[in-house]
Image 1 (tube, rainbow over the protein chains, first blue to last red):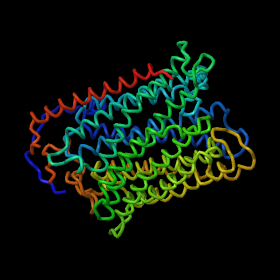
Image 2 (image 1 turned 90 degrees about the vertical axis):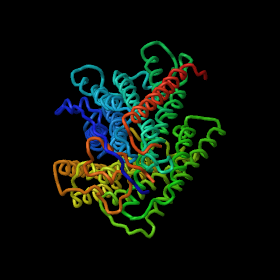
Image 3 (image 1 turned 30 degrees about the vertical axis):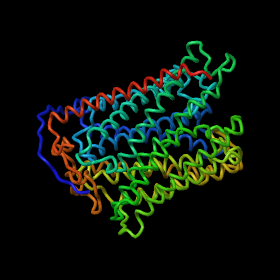
Image 4 (image 1 turned 135 degrees about the vertical axis):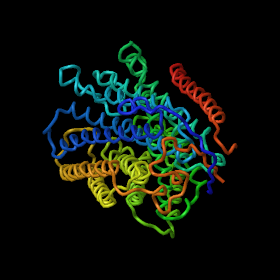
Length: 530
Length: 40
């Protein structure tokens, strides 16, 4: 892709400083920074919750907390990590990078962008407030149903369920706003000459994500609204005693819940090829194949939802349909893996921190895919369902695939955003500690699941003690090693060796044509893509 | 596609973005509301 620049255009604008800057900003870079900062804070909030859970599980028996509080920590950990850490991190990337990558001056709807972010903090407060209220004797704590809100437990639960329902509504509105903004920005603000088949893969990944959010968030919102009316307004959508159907809730929830997995992963699948191409010093292999795979995965993701509850008692034809449709997702995913590996094939590879994280992502996310195939098998799932095997599988998908993907992106783009290089030594320490401790935490959970340990319990049989102890040690190392990540980011924001516009030797794309950090308006002089 | 992003061109593209944004917003609202009328 060759690039030419055209005439400059100047904007005279009022830029407030201090807190007012952040409250009123419509600049995509400021809003991206706020999303990423918020995501990092909530990553530690959700992490502390699960470390408390792992501490309780270090030994059999109840040592530290009541089972009710244990359940609350697990549910809120998942909601926080999914809705308040991973999704905002991906939206932060989109805000920072999409205008830079497609040659746009900003996002197309900047005020909507500001509103989308500022809905997040109140939602996070709503999610976690019931913990504090319970300390003062108000209510019985946060939502204790797990992140899935399954009825009829959620119909009978305490005020934590209501807080979570409102939080999910607000988070959903925020996601919809972000999605609309990303779609219209990609459709309307691309640089001259940038056709859809020249769009960077990161933008393609986010485009499919945005459409998935628009298709599925209303279904989740509808389901939890019905739950709210069941709880307080006398309806019986999910109450069998009143003619309702609790299984209907599972269908509605997972119609959103399964695409949500791809909502979390598609932005990462979009950014990984950029990193592999940069550090292999080769063009991305199979651009079109990757785009078509993104589209195929997006479509397949909305027709496979019932594999999350095979054991609920469905007709055999339905079981067979959901099994094979789920397994068929492995075909486009295999295409992606092939393209990632082929991009590196015979490349002049170097292993800076982003490349290390990308390698870790490929290997560990590959394990998520393979164990997912096992769970997609109806016969095998009867044994693994609701066991620690599932917990291990989805952490390989969402930590190794999601969070480590986000870390890849942060290490790749941070010098562009701040204008400074971070410490490579600290970055590499962070990578190796994360990979080793992550496996130390979750490999034992596969064995626990295979041995029959159910998930979401604070106590367990003695036979599971050793693997749980190892898992807890791994979790604490994993948690503590993330402090290196935060420290490295902090020192990079504060200073460090100056970064060039083209931060990495092999980097290609519009964003690297701009200085580091980019100017207030990213492309006052719009590039022409030839 | 024009090579320069003049203020007029930017305004035109932002207006097109607002129209598409509203259309997508209406789709979201319709999905949410229509769901309540789906019969088992």
